[in-house]
Length: 446
View 1 (spheres, rainbow, N blue to C red):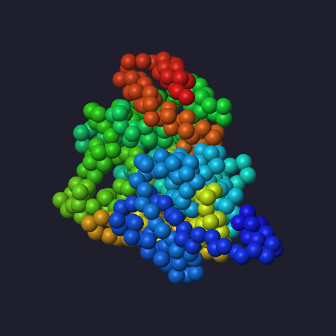
View 2 (view 1 turned 180 degrees about the vertical axis):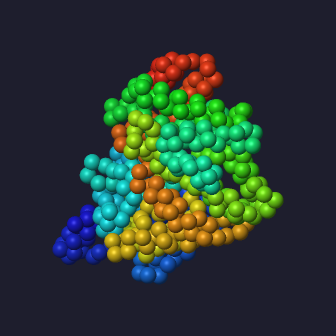
View 3 (view 1 turned 30 degrees about the vertical axis):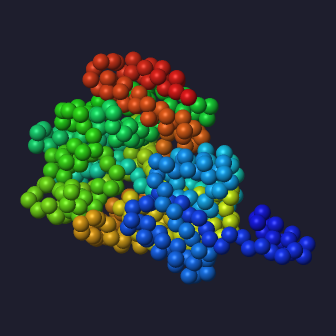
């Protein structure tokens, strides 16, 4: 029996009047853009209309969320439910902010097998789960499937296949083999590099904290990254050049987030494809393929770099009502939850036990785009939709499995890896010197 029910039962047995618990849930969300907020308010109204309690939807700027929650915890005034990023799941549970028992009960009631395993693993505690996965996305290798087919190439789902494609397709300035991230002070380079390191099974942390990078496996990472950088245009490159060159038909491969998918199909005027004279063309979308799980020689299973968001039920919550709201948002209301921003909210629940693809199919029919709208299922083939959704099963990040996400995040944010990898790419240090330098700098971060 849940603690709240135990308390109520004791009151009844004692013959005391039952004082009503809070009749309005406080739900904090970082989806604060007006259109997204309106959708969440409509969902809250629908939940109340179906017999749930009233829900006050409170927009919180994402960069302020950590500070706001800490202050609310100190004041004993936490919201009932909070929509939060991956980085907070385990630390907030350890701090006593999140009720992992409630989250675990929700997941078990919905069916743990209906969730993407990678999304669950990221929030796993010793006895269950810190929070309930809501949505996420995985970084992708975006490639010209038509060029690959013409050259008889396998999809770029491994270091070896990427390098083979570069050998076959790199023909500058008409076609660059790749557009690698090389601008050291851009977070984009940090994300791309972490993806490439994860693909080869290399991490700078273990359960005890910093763990020296394996020299042999890290050397493979360095050599691969230098190869894709050598197949890129000169200059300081980040997401902007990657997208522009791919949209112009000037590169065979890039690494990007799924937020490129609507733009790729000509649905956003601020970022039109320029492969032909029609800014609304879908020609490029038709010849594009994507890969989410990507492997290196030391890690044949590969990995996908993932960003997942969660519903956290707090320790101050009206637990039963909060659980009911999360169950609704992940059940009857889940398609509406995904519709808040479907281009970046991949379903972490593909379906139910009775209908395993229910939500994935519904998500593919949700309209995406800015200046024009169309469902992803109308823009891309089913196998590509399956690849997009399936990436969350193998999604990873440095420090998740080891319980060291906070430390790993500090290492990433230091940009030491970016800087030293760039030095290696530029020939300023050898591979062994680069590994030693990274180990030296990362070991000092606490």
